[in-house]
Image 1 (cartoon, helix red, strand yellow):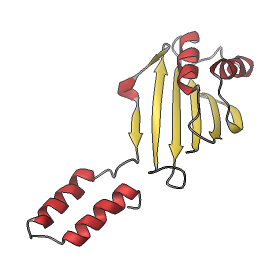
Image 2 (cartoon, helix red, strand yellow; image 1 turned 30 degrees about the horizontal axis):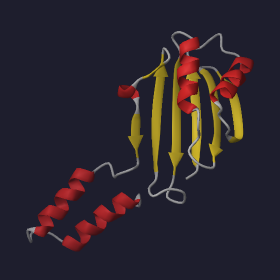
Image 3 (cartoon, one colour; image 1 turned 90 degrees about the horizontal axis):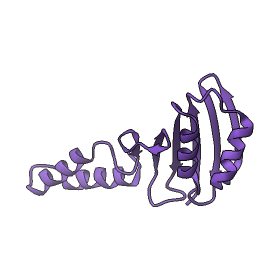
Image 4 (cartoon, helix red, strand yellow; image 1 turned 90 degrees about the vertical axis):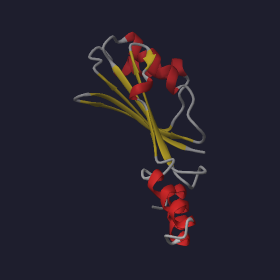
Length: 145
């Protein structure tokens, strides 16, 4: 499964491209078509990997730990061409630590999954269109709608 990866480093005023490249090397990150852009609010590293990229967590802990007050946000996206389902995970690191309550995963199931399941259950009682409810649930799980 290949992934598209975006790493955003903010609130790290002493971070330079040279230091960023050293951190990438320490973490062993190897992205295809890697780009590094300095922006007004920080740095953005982007690229893709043939499989899930390695070293992203190590990079987040390393850079956020070496630059107090900084925040490293790592986004990994994939789609149904390369995985069983489409989706995105976002991990956040502050002070050298992973911050689980700031992380998120999306796209793996439909946003309204509970409603779609309820529609199937309702249809099973005979008060709804079972075929339509099942189709809607299956499409949502496939990332179609």
